[in-house]
Image (tube, rainbow, N blue to C red; front, side):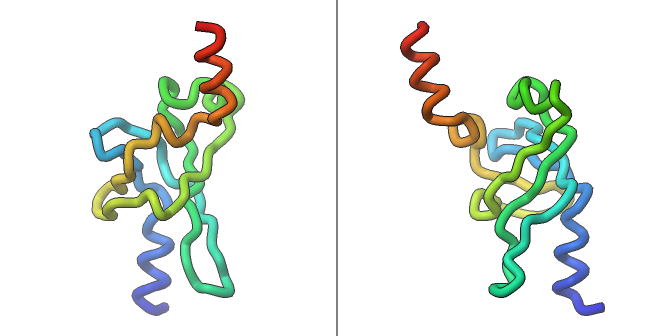
Length: 98
């Protein structure tokens, strides 16, 4: 087994935090682009219920684009996720209602 393969599989199970230190979720799987041999995204489960209330209640996960990853160590740090995860249409509805 080569080092690259070990690095990729070692991402599964790591906790993911925003660059502000907020727990986002835990890596359950990876979204890969086999032809380009790249990681496209991190499939997260055990989500922060405050950030993802609907997904947590439905026991669904989310996929975070790998380009958001800032660093990988004992934990994975990603760019601030709250604004980016919400659907722009949902934000407009919230603004209209409020």
